[in-house]
Image (tube, rainbow, N blue to C red; front, side):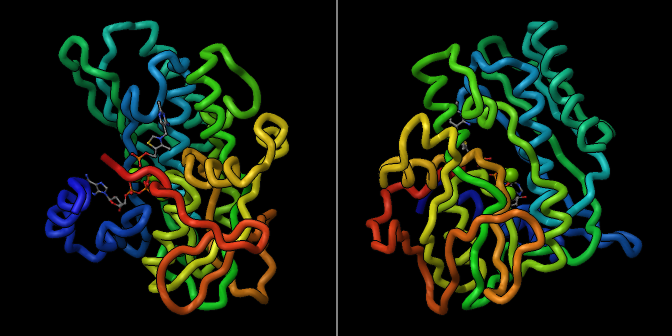
Length: 304
Ligand SMILES: Nc1ncnc2c1ncn2[C@@H]1O[C@H](COP(=O)(O)OP(=O)(O)OP(=O)(O)O)[C@@H](O)[C@H]1O
Ligand SMILES: Cc1ncc(C[n+]2csc(CCOP(=O)(O)O)c2C)c(N)n1
Ligand SMILES: [Mg+2]
Ligand SMILES: [Mg+2]
Ligand SMILES: [Mg+2]
């Protein structure tokens, strides 16, 4: 058992309130006075979630975007957020971070309500957390609601951000749509709100299509087959569309597209790309051009 799963097992013992959903969903759903509050928190650490040289405004933007993405996955309306911030020792860096964060908060109408500021020991990596609060606008789709026979869809292609990161690792001054996808993900709030009343299950893709689809299948007690890995024209122009590129795109993560399950007879109410289907049983199968492909050793990012 990995260190992460031991930790999660211990955490789950502390999280027995039904609002925590067994710590198996993107968010907690807390009923308060007739409203359903949607609660989520994501942290970014320098060197783990962003490159040390990434522009601070982009890091601030991304911290807001990744949290808004979990609200989007539940069709929730942003209500506000709390920021936990470790001062970097560089005032202009911190100011630029807040400018990017503020831009994302204003764009998505999510007011900053509070937080905490700390000083880290010299040499510690930068790190920041945001806790986002939202309100359910209708039914809250879970990760675990898919039904046998459902189709699996994505709101957009995968792999742009992962290949954008790879470009930056070899060419720190790289720019263009793939780098933008890595640094400025766009949370799919409008799509999430339109989808939520119709889908059987929904989550955002942060750790990679393969691992996140496998999590949805496991939570739903079903098997899932991924039979299409959608690539953007920009990615195909940079890397082509070989099986290796498709697999890299499907395990790269940082996509922040919505992944959702719909009955085969229902047309998605937003632009979406069919990527697979659910069936009775368990596990993940990957097919490219109709041919089953051995799964890579690592399906995506696991915490820790
Ligand atoms: N340290 C923690 N304490 C309490 N709950 C946690 C902790 N870490 C994760 N969780 C809970 O575990 C569940 C899954 O979290 P996870 O971070 O994997 O989801 P996510 O935000 O959708 O994915 P990602 O972090 O890749 O964006 C959520 O309910 C989350 O609140
Ligand atoms: C410098 C750098 N290296 C790698 C990555 C890719 N990455 C790291 S963690 C993660 C999943 C989400 O994190 P978590 O599950 O911890 O919330 C992804 C996609 C990155 N963004 N920056
Ligand atoms: Mg999520
Ligand atoms: Mg998280
Ligand atoms: Mg998240």
